[in-house]
Image 1 (tube, rainbow, N blue to C red):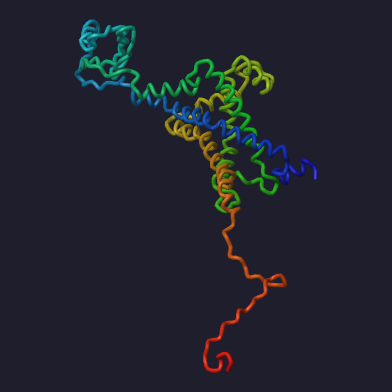
Image 2 (cartoon, one colour; image 1 turned 135 degrees about the horizontal axis):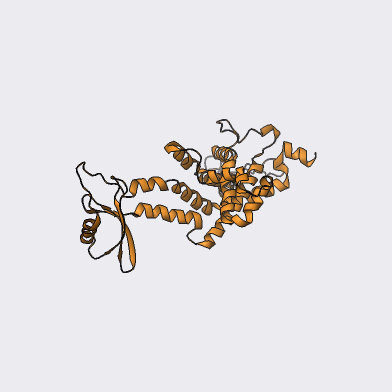
Length: 334
């Protein structure tokens, strides 16, 4: 049987495939924490726009007859409210339902706030804790909070993510008679539910993972990889002639579709790397770790009682005569 025939019928018997499986497995386990951080922070970033809508105190609800403070009256009221601070830059509201943006300063520190110009009260900082948290997650996702070094590390992570995705596609092939395994999740299957989930999500979400990885590489190294990727796409050198790259960037930044339904759909899809990490780890635990933990118990048989000896080597049974009790006719000399 040739190598091609073995690949078509029983790819598990090929040594290169077994080696690729080990690389895929241990790269995934070692890469797991990074995937978890990037996946969860990327999912949180899709909530960045709603977070500003929910938590930024920039809206006011004035009464119909309310008159807004402006000019010197507005600034004098701000000086009273922000006593102990220097009132700096002020951006007046452009709509009736929007608050006035003001930056106050003390000790060289600047604090942006929103001010209700109708009631003359402070509405709070423009970046409350929820918005600060989402901004920190954005920095974690883009640069790992390490600046330029983190951006470069993200580039290497994107490359490894692409290689893992491609290796997963190769490992997905189970042979000609089992080609459909991994395309669906079935109750009656020789594989566990976690294995089926890993193969199912990995196959149907391959385009997403390639888009995230390739666009991440392009974002990190635009001058180096941008022209190369466009050339691979068809020899084009202009950005407008690279539709695949534009599609990948649109997928990376969840720009396909509009409305809340599209946003929540992208949020669900952003958990794909986390699902693959968890399912792959569970499969490895069930197939490798748990079996090794249970092996010593199975290898030690329970103690058995010795079987009675039979055959020519058996020890012969000797009967021990009993002493006769004294009685009539048993006395000596009678």
